[in-house]
Length: 88
Image (cartoon, rainbow, N blue to C red; front, side, top):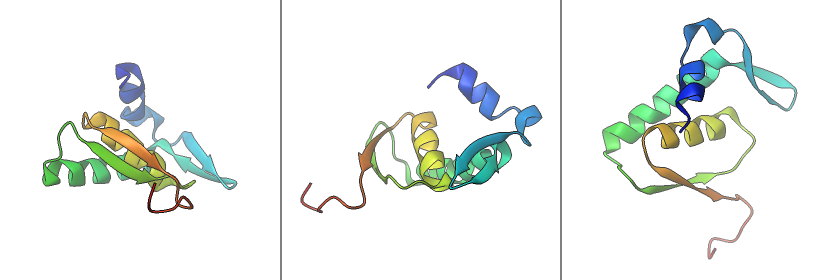
C-alpha cells in the first residue's frame, strides 16, 4: 500500500474534504477513515494475517473501506460480484 496515500488518508487536515462520491452522495475522508479503522480493527481482532479476504463489490462506502482495511492489514482481497453464481 502506498505510504503517501495512507498518510493522506489518515491526516486529520483532510477530514472535511470529499473522498468518495457514491450515487451523488459525498463522503469525507473522516467518514472513510472511520469505516476503514472499524473494519481494520475487526481484521486485527480476528487474527487474519497474509490471507485472501473476499469482498462483495457494491458501490458503497463499506466496500471501499473494506478494501483499504484489507490492504493496510497486509492481506489481499478477492473481489466477489454479488450477482455471480455461488459456484464461482
